[in-house]
Length: 407
Image 1 (tube, rainbow, N blue to C red):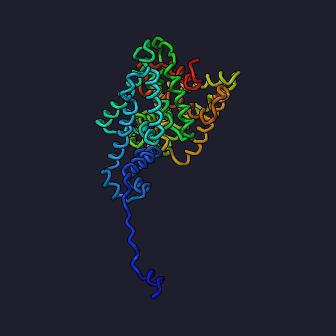
Image 2: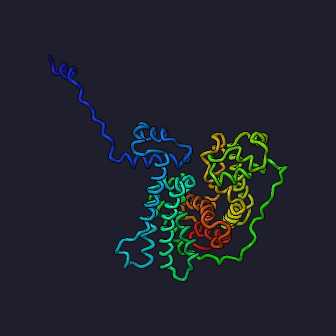
Image 3: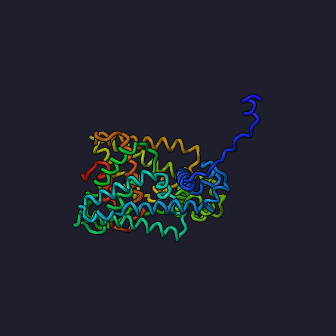
């Protein structure tokens, strides 16, 4: 028998497939990306298993449920954030500026590394069970408090309220990269976030004005069912999350006799969500024309800032829903909405680059996106009742982020 014949008749060598040592980390990263892009309710354990390339049974050996996977990844980010604001023992001899710089650098690096999980943490937290939400809230209070103390050491004249506003703003601007897919290499992305964080740390906040009457709540007559349904739907989507709201819930909130009455005005619950998104997009797009009729790019950009902040304050729930529920918009609507979003961002970016020619369009886009999400974040943290962050302060902070220093 020839050597080749012997080879053909010999028993093939058995291939041993070994489980990767980092399988659990691989599952966590994959699930974070899936939850971040499709929402917690838009992903199943089977979807995650397919993305990882394992069976559902293998996935369940690592995590007993989708919630366990969601919880573990969110709390892991909370722990990482607390670790990022810690200082090494030798920092006791550092100047305040160096200590703050060290923490800003670590928070930026950690956020870039965990960008998919940052997306998940920013918009899906309502689905955490109460005890887990308390843990996460405590983690972020610790992180915000640590950065507040570091800014306070650098600027001891500031009161606690202002230090907290600046700390929340720094975290918002850095974590804002989780709200979009704008691509920028790590080095220039780090540089633009670092510069923005330092501009905020040094910002002079205007003194809070005396409480003024906010936008008057308009009672929509029952006869205007189309508007009333949209208003009640947005309120419920904001409170509970889109997947947890039924057409029956919306009908009850609008004082309709039955869910079937909703279908006289909207084809489905998703049609209501799409209508809300179109309204938010139209509000932002509609501001561009009046703003750009002014004399200079700086004036146009300042007008856009004023109009965006005013609109967001007037419709807090709608602005939040616009960020939190995009994955639930009907597929046929997404392309149209994304095109409007791109046009809005492009107009802001064009103006910002004209005001700050040292910025590339990609860097300007990061700052614009961070400014949009900051308004939502400040509303979530401080609300309308807390005088720490009224409208004029929010405008000032957006100017600081975009222009690089207080104007």
